[in-house]
Image (tube, rainbow, N blue to C red; front, side, top):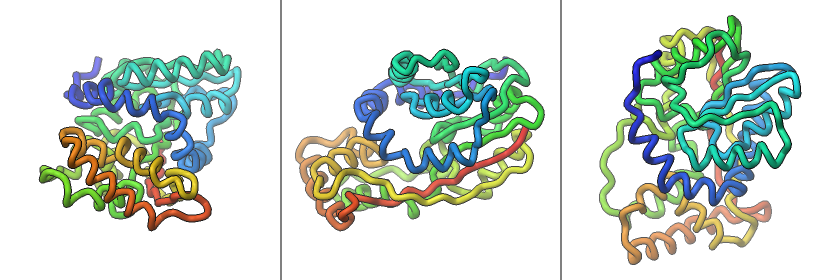
Length: 284
């Protein structure tokens, strides 16, 4: 068995308020991420009959999409550390009548995968939270057959992700001082640095590692729906964490500031900001 990683803080976070938010907003998040999900699935090229491991599968959108592509002869094994989100994923699998997909609550960094059993390792925003990413991806490498493929989508730097940055910048002056962050610490931007990310996968035993930039529009809400977009921005992403300990007066002022900032992004196509990711590809 691999040595235990210290992922306790992430496990606690994704089983508490984050789980409540992400399950409540599941449909809106699926829609928001749909363009990025499509690019990741195209790059991953899941094939009929593949055994696919989906890391950080959350509420199950990617499990459902992968299971459809793997077909009856294939199987998808989803893993997540969040019990509430995994429960939602299982509900969706059952509702879809899928028999080739399962979801397990487990820390993938130390999970005892059957050796050499997977054709494709996939993740959409689920791999940036490991305490020791090299050890985690070495463990995941052991699950792959020789020549197996990896495709992970992870956020590029904050400066290129206006869907994170615009609400946070609007609120920053109104918030309590934020502690400095370690750019390599577990979190959404842990893989933003291309050179560091490349080294992580190489050091974990993966070959032919490539990072491809992909930018897409992120539609927060329909045109004119500033109130809905503002609520979403305050519940999901960096700003949600920064607001966690703030009182109602600060939250009200932040709400006004974020609404004003989002008005600049209100277009006939909707309230649209930019998402920028790395599509990380490699072979076992």
